[in-house]
Amino acid sequence: MPRSGKPRGKVVYRRAHVQVNYEHNHKGVAAIAVSPNVFAALNQIVVREAMPYAMSISPVYLGTYRASFELRNDVVRVSGRAGRMARASAQLHNTAPHALAVEWGNKAFRGRGNGYRVLARTLAYLHATAHLT
Image: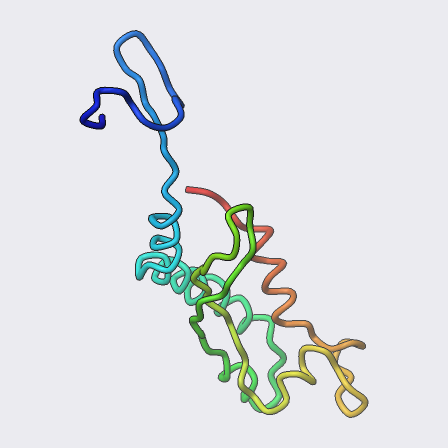
């Protein structure tokens, strides 16, 4: 409670002997959004869930594509009600020379008609298996 004795922020919970107030702190949220803990959580999802799944559905001819997945971290800016804000990002990339042909297909490499769509299918898998714990 502030020194003036009057609680600040919006009342979000009230009972007989307890009152909880919430005051949004944009700078605090912005700091959390790019914190090392957020990067670690995102990296864990990519390394433990996305990468193994992508590798399991990858076409294997010489093994180059399957062995070329890597994790990349970045800070991206997104727009919201409070304006533009930085957010942590963890991305799964494939660095094989023929990665685009495997994903999208081309005249020389038809794959599954329009490509194997490994990364797109991996994203769909993550969406389907997402859960809040």
